[in-house]
Image 1 (cartoon, rainbow over the protein chains, first blue to last red):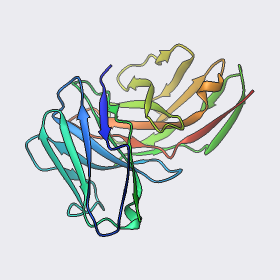
Image 2 (image 1 turned 45 degrees about the vertical axis):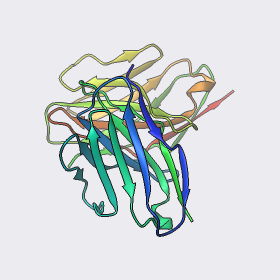
Image 3 (image 1 turned 180 degrees about the horizontal axis):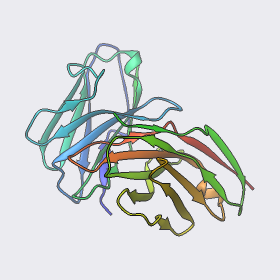
Length: 114
Length: 115
């Protein structure tokens, strides 16, 4: 099956700094990747759709200036949390699809802002 | 906008027994996909089963099967012969058939397996 990786798996940063999370499709090309956010004991919420070579599409209520998404190649999308605050602490998960409707998920990144 | 509702925050079942997790959804679309995902403590999302809305036949994957009622907008998951490894959060999810859309998830059901 298709494999999606994320790096780092866990990051701790200080309030006010920025942190970058990488999502890679290891064995397929992905023109579209998705970023989700999951708070403790809650469900996944779609944050944005990352499109290779074009601007990301953000869901309503997601601050595009805080969560910068770059899809620089067919195998890599990055999510940068700018000027992070403790309320940005969460579990961030990316997913992608090689061609069909089925999505494959990365293992997630736990972000802790102190 | 589509919504997915899972009304059972937690379910408990004895090992080797059968359990059914409920899911309802709301959409105005006629063609779409439905999924059940499992999220164990590792938090890796694992696809359990999928259903295409245009298919009348209910999907089955080994011990996992669904009861898809399109008119009622219901998509329940039945787990037979429950095993300890089935313990996890289970999320029902919806995806539109057209375009490159992300998934809409329900709130999840925490499944506990009693040995």
